[in-house]
Length: 142
Image 1 (cartoon, rainbow, N blue to C red):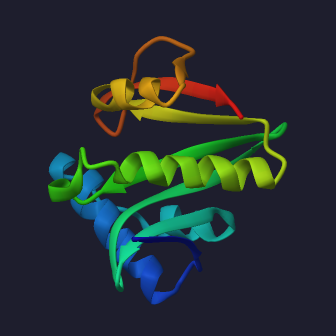
Image 2 (cartoon, one colour):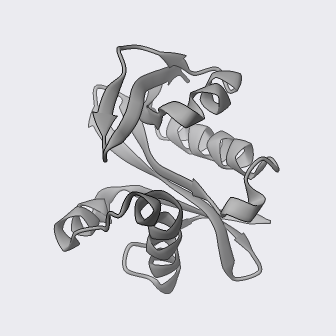
């Protein structure tokens, strides 16, 4: 398993879009817009690979005030629960810390809250709906 930062527009980025679509959007009957993907050009794009096949990914988006936001965390369905997500999160936190961020925030799906709580994240607000499903704002001081 290799985790690395990938470039927007690369073949690895296309794998990331495909993985995120399959895991996060397709089950909800949703897709990505061209505008949505174009906004990711300044994000930190992280992929987890076995050989050349992407198995997990996430994005980090600068929110200002030394806060970075985790977005679009996805792991292939057959590999969920095997520690890949935890390793991806540790890598993302280290990258954020190395770049001077002090807090990592996210909009976590309600079904994933327990996973993030085990990694030290806490809920900071009321439940809300995003992309048609329940979410919670969560954060962790780095």
